[in-house]
Length: 192
Image 1 (cartoon, rainbow, N blue to C red):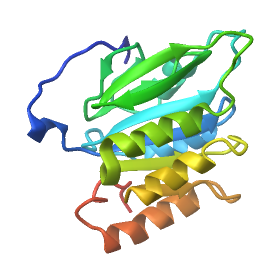
Image 2: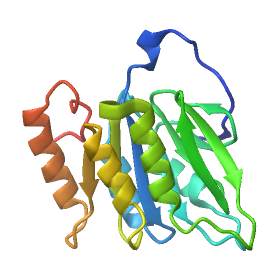
Image 3: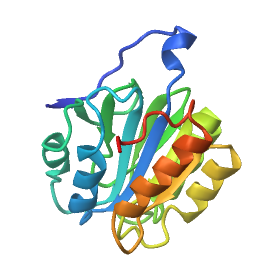
Image 4: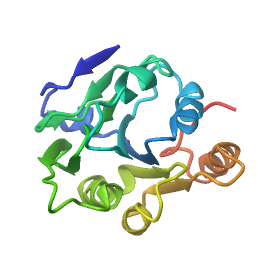
């Protein structure tokens, strides 16, 4: 199901103690996104925010495509969207997203001053906002974007994963290893 994201939820701290997974990818990472979401349960107890490099000259079909791979609701991010567990959020074309107080903030880009590292921007603000409850996943084709953001997440105690040349198999393997080391915070990795 694809929906426009809007503000909802409560201010109760107990409801805001869940991991937020940032996923950075190129526009051509559809197969990797499919593998990532196909292994995820219906209600994993986390939120996913997908940041991609999309052409500003095209309408993205990514929300509809990702909705085919997951039972979680898929939302196009709007400024001021509250992040809720068991939801997927996608960056709109030609924008940069940041997070503060578990709320997504979207900034449009102009053609003269385009942000070249939208994944780094999001991952860095995610690390600052939720610390050890942050995770960063880099999928194929993101160039060097995400490198600094992954470092920020790791420095704040979050989980970092990157797709290897052999695809998602390494991510799943790494996640299983992390589960055995940090069972309480990584219990939501894809099933074996």
